[in-house]
Amino acid sequence: GSAKWDYTSGLFSLSLLKLNEKVRDTNYVRFAQAAIGSFISPDGRIQGYKPEDYNLDNLNPGKTALALYRITRDERYKQAAALLVKQLETQPRTSEGGFWHKKIYPSQMWLDGLYMGEPFYAEYALTFDEKAAFDDIAKQFILMERHARDNKTGLLYHGWDESRKQRWADPTTGRSPNFWGRAMGWYAMALVDTLDHFPRKHPQRAEPVAILNRLAQAVARYQDARSGLWYQVLDKAGEKGNYLESSAACMFVYALAKGVRNGYLPASYRRVAQKGYRGILKEFVKTDANGQTNLEGTVSVAGLGGNPYRDGSYEYYLSEKVVTNDPKGVGALLLA
Image (cartoon, rainbow, N blue to C red; front, side, top):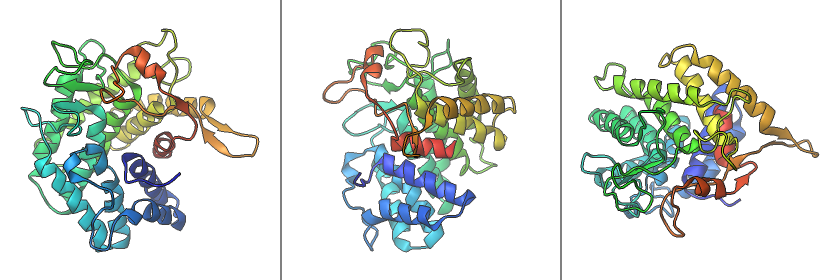
């Protein structure tokens, strides 16, 4: 399809550049340059990007811009990244300093937003020596966990509305009603990717590591014993209409495997990741009649609020289309 400056192109192009680090292929770099670089003008402006939307999703392709800057040393990639970071200087925040997910979603933090914003913010801060950013970055994870984590299951709700105004928000806690697999996948990837850039001696570094350990425990607990996979709505395995979803599995496998490899998680999680990976290959990676390999079973999208209104109900999460070769699923599979 046609490229867009959006989080999906960002994830997919970044996954190709990560693949390029393991299996050198100039086509991967060329693809990322075409997909993301084509939006960046010679003076570093980004076509179609509106900072005034204050949309965290728009920051995600900044990771690809930074990766391309490292590979090519082309200044326009650095300028584009600087432009994106500038958005965060005036991004609206909750009363405690948590970034709103988007201006059109006031007072709300969503798990997805942590993946869109924090690893990029951290990589930029490390690359250009902006040490003050790391307290702010750690705070985003702490606030998200504080407001979205369910103590009983250890799972995190998809979103939290400080104002309690949304129809989807619990009037007491402000939380959305369900645990969506991919939302927790975004949050898990956000933690391991941010830690790549978080200074080792920083006093706040222990916080995201501890959050990752609590999250890993819950992810392992809700892994389906038979298939090694996870359900679209994580804690409702046996309920009518629920299904095993591929992008969440890919994201969890990636986050757990990377967490073990980098020493953030105990080695016992390697088994959880391996079982998940085998499940992905068995259930979701299929070769069709033309010999093409496909990734099946990815939910195309899920959000909260907006128009038409998404109420965060169990039925809502099961109503979104399940598709083949969604770039969010394929990108996460390459990372896994």
